[in-house]
Image (cartoon, rainbow, N blue to C red; front, top):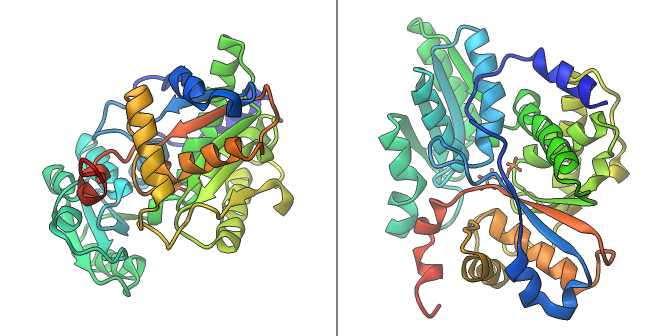
Length: 344
Ligand SMILES: *Cc1c(COP(=O)(O)O)cnc(C)c1O
């Protein structure tokens, strides 16, 4: 089965943005801190925050296929969209720099924060450092519509433009996490650890969709993946993620999955995208203080809070192994300085 998935993936245009498989590590100090609550559960993280380009993060896996596709189509420019503190925008800018493409970013003010940390620090500084052109648009404007208009203007002047959607989560982008499922299967076999659950945040749904498509393609089951919605309301996240799983499986020439194989919780969304929750702050602190590792305030902090909550509520079967994917987003911590001030 692994061979079939890998064979299909190998036919897709791809550039190299990751140098190595990202490590899988055990969270021994958090396990100890959870004490009785842990119930014999094995807590592991896959370090997708550790990558050698542009500060790293989950979007690089998608960008391997997105840039591959763009370059195969002869593009000289990539345009993508996101919020002001988009990690995807930052990593698109870095990957474009690495491959000599021009990059334009349409960034919407979708999160109601206008303090200087949020509007000028974190990812946005890095976007500019990587040489991207930034289009700053209001929160109620469709960034994708602005991106398409800009693409037309550039095409009229002779440029070849590739437009990537929010979070890079086209079916081509999702292939990055289908490939990650294969990477996890190989590491799991080599380390002789079986992971019953894979836990991720759900923003644009591409990480969940790609992993579910990959595990379905491997015959290991799409339902192994559980995500915590941090952007859309949970019903919308379920519908969007199912569509993406099946679009990705179609690219891989594999049969689709049914809605009951899409496991998403809405319990950590709080007041909405980019709005901190107390549980997120506690989870970020716990990971930093017990393990010396960094979660981010928008995605992985909320998802890890969800996993801690599942453990506390006995939602996981004793003795099972859980793999939490650390997805990066570290620059956003600086945009949320207020929340992490000493004593907060
Ligand atoms: C984008 C992002 C996610 C969510 O991935 P999706 O594929 O959009 O669901 C999770 N963590 C971080 C740090 C991200 O930047």
